[in-house]
Length: 230
Image (cartoon, rainbow, N blue to C red; front, top):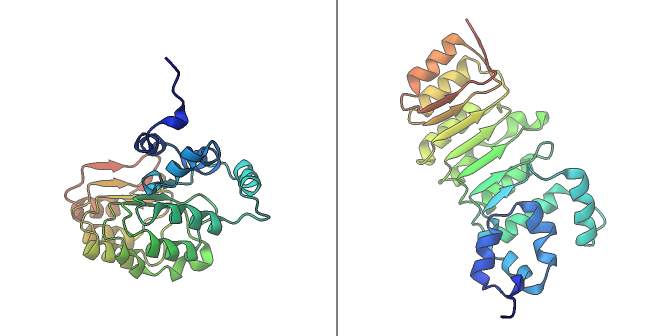
């Protein structure tokens, strides 16, 4: 029997395979193999998971400019490229370290209404107090929010989540100091949260008890390498 070739697979089969690949393979590898692979790679189902973290910036940026024949690299352009491919169907978006900007969050809030999981590694310091909590209203399907830096508007953000994100079950706040106001906000606005990750954070025993008393439906609480003081 004549051997069948990968490029001869049915389009649905190719899409199913590509759904399990990372962004780097989908951007720099798959589209340049053949026409059928390129066509399959443009299916929006292949772009539901937009996780930038595994990408190595140094090697990726050079290859990206070479393959797409552009002179300069910008994360804004890359973000718009992958979000456009997703056609509004992205359910998970993980921003990479060092690139997060307020304009990126505003753009994503408009173009990715179906997000269920959002990862924000840090906010640029000068913009900490300018993050508009109302942006969270647009993510009605949000289930998990991952933060490694707490914006000044965290209380307002959690209030919006409580009012508009009815499926919200998980919050990751890693590597920051949790004061009385933040601890109180957790208990007040996230009473039905299931998973809470406070790894590498610092908080008092009193505030830990405030959180536990307020979040009565907690199933998992992570405190790995956290500093809990008396």
